[in-house]
Image (cartoon, rainbow, N blue to C red; front, side):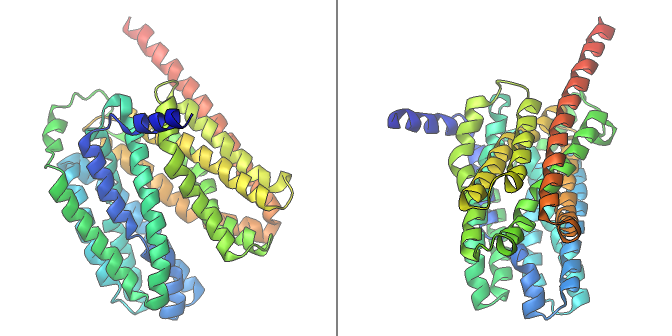
Amino acid sequence: MLSKTAILYKNAFTGLSKNTWYLSAVMLVNRSGTMVIPFMTMYCTQQLHFSLPQAGIVMALFGAGAIAGAYIGGRITDKFGFYSQQFASLLLGGIMFIVTGFLQTYLSLCIGTFILSLCNESFRPANAAAIAYYSEVENRTRSYSLNRLAINLGWAVGGALGGLLASINYHLLFWVDGSTNIVAALLLFKLLPYANSKASILKDKPLQKLHAYNDKFYIAFIIITFFFASCFFQLFTIQPVFFKTQWHYNEAFIGFLMALNGIIIVFSEMILVYSIEGKKLNTYFIRIGFFLSAVSFACLNVLPTSHFTAFTSITFITIGEMLSMPFMSSFYIQRSALHNRGQYAALYAIAWSLAQIAAPLSGSRIAAFYGFNVLWWVLSAVCFCSAIAILLLEQKMKSAERSAVITSA
């Protein structure tokens, strides 16, 4: 049994291109320095003595910068290629992290945070396009899973190190975050040969619409993604507050619950994706993942207050995440081509950025006015409806494909 498990692990990680591994190494270095944003609210209130509403505005501007960065990054990726955009984003983002650490006034920090986020988040569309470029069709979903593994490992390292550095000096967070961005840029330049994806784009046959914004099925998918993501982000924003104030768990246990999400992903996702990739349509796994997320939130109401219930809820939503998110990336990559992949990746990133803003705003208000029980039922219902919406989208797409075949015949 042990040898079979070892072989399964080995197979799950084999067959990926060398450049895919290099790209994930760059992401690991980059995300290992991710520590400013998780502590930004505390930095604003504790170090700079801003009010909580002012800190909220700063974080909202980070979200706005992320949306602008995703849009601009997608346009640049399609126009000039992903390689230069990744390098520029990492380098400029690193410089802006360091600069932002010197901004002490409210207005300057608001402006600096927006520019920082714009530079930093413009990396996402280019990185998504790069993963698709360096991978093969048969292992593309696994390539995205490897990238997610690097992100989760980096977040774990960055979060732990960030807490230690914040206890010493908040300004160290900006220096380390900026330095890891710059190191990641240099690592990208050193490990990955220059890819003239712009030349490939010019030769690419325009099999898809010129603009992602004209793809009605993809726009529907983006809307569904926003609603699901708005539920998913409750895991890291409102759910810890619930565990603390309602179930009276201490910070150490809550931190462990949050870490459990990353631990399960690191040890399980690659094997899971390897076992099921290509077996069914991407939309099938996406809707199963959404349904399991609905079950996760329902558990908090249906099951009794206990450590077991907390573990069960986290486990369900993590499995749902592992089933849905890698295949969501594969879904939009399949609908795009080289000449418009940046647009598709940008819209996807924008949906998640908008959800990151909407999640704490909506979740906190529902919990405050109607209680946490209502919040969990609402989130469960939205996830369930999202699963149904994906099923309906899948059926509409199949119907359109059949009509296209009949028309062409």
